[in-house]
Amino acid sequence: MSIKKEYFRLRNRGLLKQDNKASITRKDLAIREIATFNQLCRIKGIDRRRDDCTFLDLGSGDQFLRHAVDDMNYIPLDIDDVDFDSGALPISANSVDILFSLAVIEHISNIDHFMSECFRVLKPSGIIYLSTPNFRYYFRDFYNDPTHVRPFTDVSLCKTLEFYGFKSVEAFPSARCKADWFYKGKYRFTKCAYLPFVGTNKWAPGFLCGRATGVICLGIKPMSVG
Image 1 (cartoon, rainbow, N blue to C red):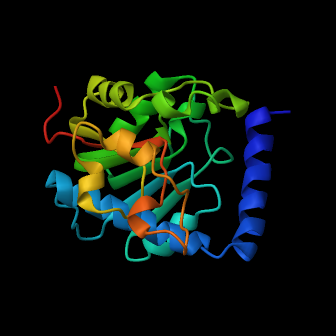
Image 2 (image 1 turned 135 degrees about the vertical axis):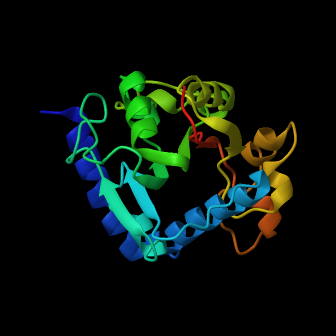
């Protein structure tokens, strides 16, 4: 038995059940994720408007992001499609405009292979968007997931992307759809990690909700490599 495949099979089944009960649906979460991506691109001065945009979702799970990118060519890949530790992504080189990989990289043993494949399939000027728990704030719970193999901090994730050739790399707290000032400044990760209310709370002010102990990292594949 593959512990990863069994774990993710149960996870995906749980997500479907959860969506039937939650006040905020997976579609809502997808819209918020893409809105946050657009916001961070704006903050960084990245123009993400592209014709015939190809969007690659690595670790797509229940493919919830499909709900928010129906104007793009959406390509989902998960553990049942390819082994991210060793398999070549079934995607042509220089063919992807936007690559999302949410909460995947912490499960990868062979980072060299995974990052090289991400770099290979992105077009020049293509955007990579990764998220993972920030070990700086999540260290107590990180290894409670038996499939977690590699922790990252905001600093180490940026250095990883830079090592593999990405430019304009920057890390942000994994809060979604907050005011711009939450994503800026030296203490941006601390601000979001210690918000007093988790998620949404109708009884609390919105700016105090959304405690986030993860990190989002953006990078761009340069126009010329070498």
